[in-house]
Image (cartoon, rainbow, N blue to C red; front, side, top):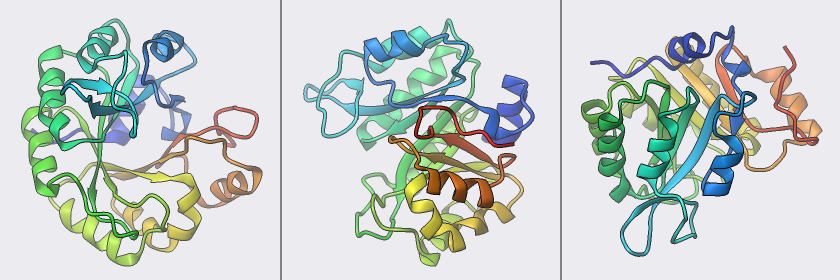
Length: 243
């Protein structure tokens, strides 16, 4: 079975015209945050980070956190009552198989993006994940998911080699959405934009902080909401929207 096509699947699931119309909640990593966002009609996708706790449990949290009051399985159980989609940002290779297995057994019908830093970026950080192992596990255990492989860079813009490496690893997949931090986007764009030459490829632009007016203008002038998801807000906390 092929992995899901993000552009078609997401638009059909939400009844929207373009990917940019999807609304997001970022870092839903606690019970309180889940209560605030679950089944909220203003939110279509929940982004969560998945870690291995200090006692070896799969929980939601962002490094350097070592624990959380929200276990992954409890989160998945909660999502059974919702049509909201999920973006899983997997932070530890030890959580990959347990997460995919839980998803497979859950019977969830909504979109699930499978994200992890699996390809080296430009700041010297080697991936924690086995790159081909990530792709193979996703395809085998949860083929109804949407592939969202990431680079390991946190601060350095992407280079042409980084894009070449990603294209090499994704050559057997026709449908992929690539996550990129909004603040790195302008400096990475000369190379990153090559990904959009492939009809089944899209971008998921994210930022944990509000996008300032200058970056907002850059995004408006350079990105296409038919091919891009925007998991970020403007300076007044509103979802990005100019189309």
